[in-house]
Image 1 (cartoon, rainbow, N blue to C red):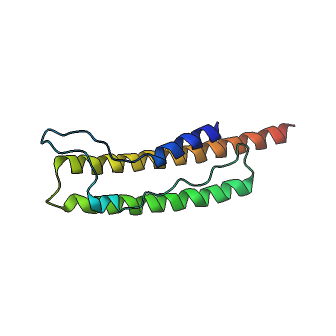
Image 2 (tube, rainbow, N blue to C red):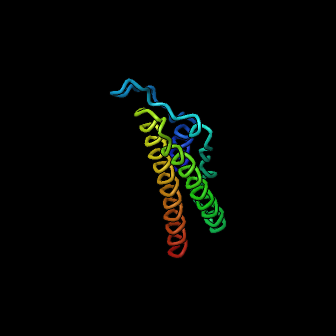
Image 3 (spheres, one colour):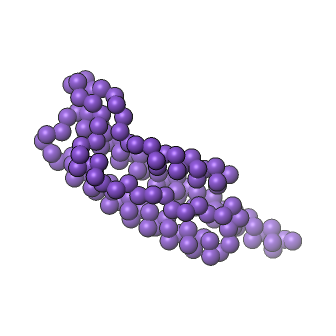
Length: 129
């Protein structure tokens, strides 16, 4: 299950955040150049399906690093919002990019939580067995 989720997350990460929708003012939903130069972080390495303690510690470090990098990314794209030269489409693209980054972060946290539950279940089964 974790592998499937991770592959889906990789597909999402590799998909550009730019859509080609047209707004009411005639502008296209395209990230401004400055925001396109912001680095969207890569999701941390997958966690084994049945993790051991060290896997969880390493994964936790990876998740924390990812969250820090996501905060830097969101700050970078948010800096563009202050420009008076943005179209309605540019502003929508920035909002889309921000929301996408939050969704990615939530998915990574969810995968980590699944790994913790798997670890606890394995430990409980080991204690019973």
